[in-house]
Image (cartoon, rainbow, N blue to C red; front, side):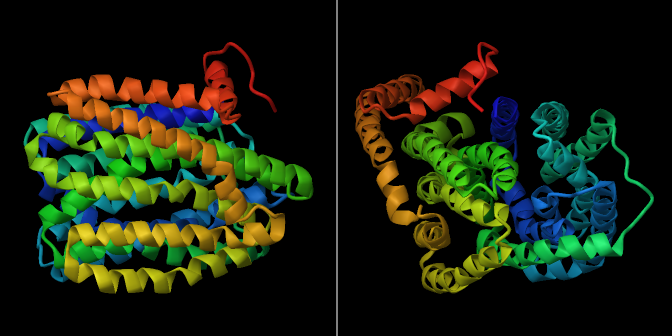
Length: 473
């Protein structure tokens, strides 16, 4: 947990700073052009992985033949999708009516092949709970690629700065994983191994299709109906609101899935760990995203300048929508960790009609209405995702909400104090410098007074990171 936290927080922090610098230099339309392609790359990555990483982690008797088979599958499918996207680039550009997307698609698609080389390497490290190497690889990659992106932006490369940053990061990760991990695939592809793993992963693949549509359909429709500038506003709002939520999700889920998989035969211990992680997620996510929603206006105006101000209401609504993301992800993780990929598929598929209805209603009303609809669908989806954990493990939505109540109350107290400070202070820098520390102090003080147990859990991880003690097993 400590190394995973170091990796995710450091990488997210550095990426966040690099993103601020790039956003000050580049225009919203530059981000919009890349955002229009997001769904095509998301689908490519989905079929390349095909749930095999989860299948390898969940399988008890995995071997080198399994790893090698999936490595070659990842690489072969990645090359296939690169070819598809290369020749589909004119159609994508025609769909959006932006000719520049032809060359952008063809160059940015190279990162798909680079990413495929890292998948099995990273899976092996996750199985061994070796997050130290992952942290080193991620930090080196993000620093070098980010520096290249900033240099390119300063030299006037525009959208190509984002392309160079993305492809360089993917290439560096692949090379560094091979260097540090010291693993090479065998020259073998086993059909029986593939068939056995695909029996589990195929359901995750189908469920992933629904999830990918759910997460990316907004970008493609906004890109088609609205301008590249509006798409850029939505893309940045999604990235900023998702940074905290996705970071916390990846920290906990990266560790939780292999641990829950190892405990799948011990239901009592499984549910205990599951509930413990759920409470930590809520403790971290709810106050963090609430705080960012409150300070988003002075933050955007001061750091990104006035040209980005239309992004503020989008960030605020998406922050509240993203509160449910890591909790929902954990509810689905316990299904895959216990081998119930069939239920995972059923849950994800059932959410598609809700998404379609929300889009039909909100698209004619504008960009803000779309993100409000996103919040409502995320809220409803949480209850759908929590249904089977409630049935199978006795830890459904109602019980989860009861466990959240003290954190929510502490967050409300923090919010009232920070809003009061924001109203009193005259300038954006003062609002940020005073409001954020006060919010943190108020929340942790309230958590201490309410005797919220997760406060101790967080301190254990922090102390472990600082090398002062080990966290509990």
